[in-house]
Image (tube, rainbow, N blue to C red; front, side, top):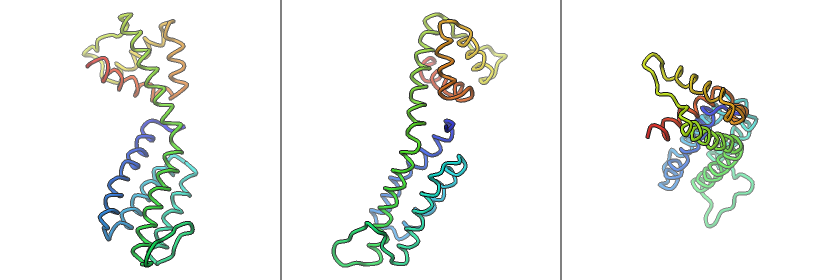
Length: 190
């Protein structure tokens, strides 16, 4: 179970793919190096979260290293004259697609879990707002203290207890506060 900050770190790395595809489309000579750097960043993020797909992502680097030497990865097909550049570009395309697929699939359950948590938090805050249970932030509290006090108020309300328990079960106590902060900032203060 990934924490929100880790899911967002991995998503951020996946969001770099369009820029890499643009480089590939422009036939940038440094595309192999750029994709290898991106793969290493992905590996670090995955390894820091002890995700076993790290090895799969690392193996994609070997595809690019081999392609740089003119070795064709199994499953790739070519039309026309076979050149080293075509091998590199096809391998880059294959690696980008495969790495994206495997990583996106690996974090999808966590993304769904946080989507559910956001929806649940919106429901909890809608009820709390209707009941007048959302307190105005006092000057003596910093943001973290205010969030903890708000969460405690929600948790102590018998009508919202089941929702707060479900929330902490979904994402844990720390990420519950993160989601609370984001939803309050986007929905209540706007």
